[in-house]
Structures are given as C-alpha cells and as structure tokens.
Image 1: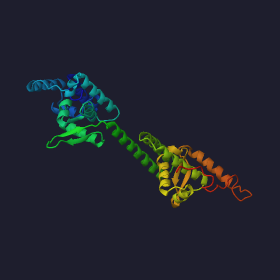
Image 2: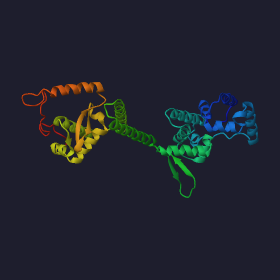
Image 3: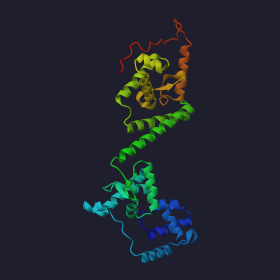
Image 4: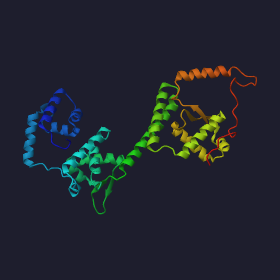
Length: 343
C-alpha cells in the first residue's frame, strides 16, 4: 500500500527489474507505489549498479531498530467519536481512492480527496494529511494544488493562525460536474473551429464534426441543456429559415417573427451550440451577416452529397413554362402562414 514500507519481496522484484533495465516509473506502476519511493530506495542502497535486495532489506531493518517502532497512522477522531471501526474507515478511504484512480485522478490526489471526503468536518491541515497518509508534506502540497485547480478543494486560513486548512464542501461533486461540463463544451467549440478550417465534407472535417456533436450533446446533458423556451425559439428560427428557402439576416428574422433582435440572436447561437436540438438540420452563417439552413454534415457521406448535388443540377437545367427550375417553387414570404411563435 502506498505510504507503507517496501517488503522484501518488492525489493527482490526491484532488483530483478534493474537487471532487465526497467525504468523507475514502470517499476512503480507495477508495484502500485510512487515513482519517488522506488528511486529513493535504489539511491539509498548503492544505486542501480549495486542494488541488492537482501542488503537493502537488512539496512532498512537496522534503520527501523534505531528509530524505534513506526508510528501507526491515526484514524480521524470522528471515527472513535461515532464508534466507527478505525480499520474499516481507513480501508474504505483507500478503496474510495482506488476508484478515483481508475477514472483518471492521480493516486496521491485521490488519496487526499478520499480522506477529506470521509472526514466528518470535511477539513484537514497538511499535518493531518501527512500523519494519516504517511507521506511527505511535499506530496500533500502537490496533491492539494491539483485538487484546488479542479475546484473541488479550497484553502482556508483561520484568523491569527499560520496553518492552512484544506476544505471539501458538500457541493464538491456538483462543482466537479460543472467543471467537467465546461471542459466538454470547450472540446465541442474547438472541434467546430476545426470543421470550419478543414471543411465539413472532408474526412478530417467530418470526423471533427462528429466530435463536436458528441461533446456538445455530452455538455448539454451535463448542464441540463437549453430550457424549454430556448428550444422552442431555436426550432421556430429553424422553421423560419426552411420556410424562407434563402439566407436571412437577424434583422429580417426579427421583422418576420416580431421578435426583438436579441431574442433572434440568442436562438441562432443556441442552434449553433446545441445542434442536437435541430437535428438533422443545422444553422450556418453566410456572407453579409445572414444565416442559412443546411443538412447536418454527419447525416450524409461525401458520395451522397455529390450524388444529390448532381441531381439538383440536372433539375435546375430543365426550366418550366414559368421560367423556374422544374419542380422548384417559390417559397412564400417568411411572415405568411408562419406558425404562431412564443411571446
């Protein structure tokens, strides 16, 4: 377990791996230990070229005899206040940490967070964590810095005291969830910029477009997505563009729908941020500040688009008696027979 002494069997494995030329990081991963534990063990026992497992074990035993019995990690006081089994409390904290490691949290950060969460006060000092985890103050400091960066732990300093206290609030998971939703939105925005650069019909652009849609859906799911009123506005603007049959500006949409321009702009931006709402059609900005409706790039392959484009060209080449392409009819003005929009 991280924080405990290396066993003789672990030292024999280290000696064998040194002969094989394995790096410290890989050794540590296989042992489930910090890399610094392995590097210090080898450095204090004659280095990579002279390391011998039994000599290292004997040296450790001599040092332990000089120091006296190792201090046993103390469980939080609340474990006894509430008549909890201290061993069960420690075991649960380690199991909790192991779960967080599996989902990507660094091991030391996971152990620190697990101990904070399982402490009734939700607050511990660096000295508390060093004693409970049996690690160095530097390890605790690095883990706290990482958790503060994730916005799941905050630092507090009591008046007239020099020691910091690290606090995890009851809303820790909500804040972690919100931070994750923001990151997913960033992934979606970055992918959309890539689509504009590579083009939605190219293989790279199509891949980025699918990525943007995935992270947009994930972010919308995590943050609750647009509200019912926002979804209604998005769909109304999409219907207006389909009905017009041509690109329209914000001013034109505002006049036709009887909405304030800010409401139209909000709906257009909502359609861009949440393409899943209008699937399979999406909105795109064109020249002169207008907006047009287009089929979602993920729905059609390049070959299908090309085939449909050729079909459109053939129909355009055959004029009707009225001088318009065969089968294509002029759309009514946007305001005519428009479904009633929200207030």
